[in-house]
Image (cartoon, rainbow, N blue to C red; front, top):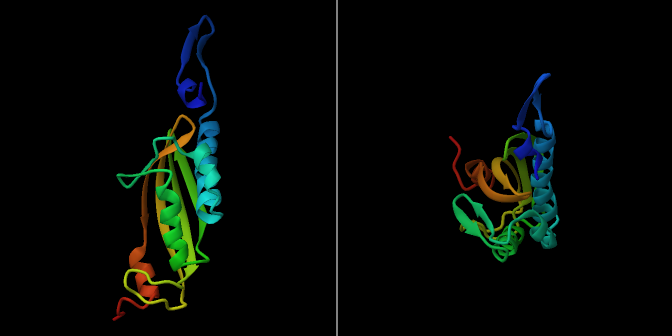
Length: 161
């Protein structure tokens, strides 16, 4: 049984109320480590053997779109084609219950066509926020947003006034 299920159990005894279970921080730290693991092992290192350990067999719902085990490698291959040195850095994490919020910085060199923009050789750095939901020790759902406008500006796609 997971700690997050136990932490709300309360037993009334002759000594008063006794709360059973793990501290909230134990669950939060476990969930944050799980999210950091997929970011480091899968996104940064390209280790797709970690998918079985970190995501459910049914896949991962990202921004309301189901990604299967086959979708993840294909999606990251596209990113690596455009930005071969793509790297995600975890800047901050906050967790509560089954949710983990992670602030990240992405960086990479534009070496392949991206959104109709010819390779520029420019190094881009932009931020993002990920909210991931954990169930039964797996990352089951994510809502990810990044500063694509900032990235496009760095690539010279947008005119600055």
